[in-house]
Length: 263
Image (cartoon, rainbow, N blue to C red; front, side):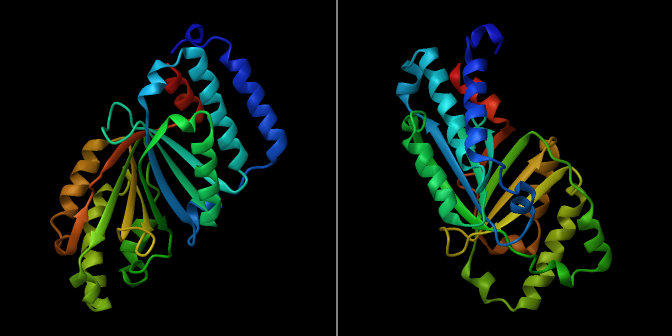
């Protein structure tokens, strides 16, 4: 979208940003929330209602500017990432990934979002919760495998979220048997470790699933091959639910989301 199609919005958005920066001060420790265990991760996907398309562009610009204000208001307590799903998914238009040390802070953000002028046009497509934890099985892996897992993974514009639920037989297995199968699972995934970034959330008791798996990649063909490889290992036979829904979108900045949705 060119500047000419975004009349006066830069001044409005910039003013709101300065206002909220002065009100909220420094943002939360984003890296800590993204990388440490014991943090709640929430994926909230929304569609825009039919009334949104009927609004004139000036009104849409004003409403997405409110979105920025809500995000900035909560940056002290939560880390927020945005994803554009429109054009790639029939589940939703936009998705928020929220990390918080206290799940109540995530709730406050989502309540304020949905109560805002922009949020009143949002219809909830789905909200899923999980918790980051220390690796259960990695400490028992061979040293070389542990070293390979420490190598950095490349981020990419594409983000995929897949909910997973295990069957009762999986949880009835002895820890040693599950550990052996997870080592096989990890060995199958390692060839794609460099090009597909992964993050696991534990959801048992917090949602109707056991795990949320989050992926980032610039090479969807590698992600496709990764999933095919994981479906061949023994551990996958204990999977009761894989996806349903599978969420696909692109990681974008707040400014990009605002510009796209205001069109």
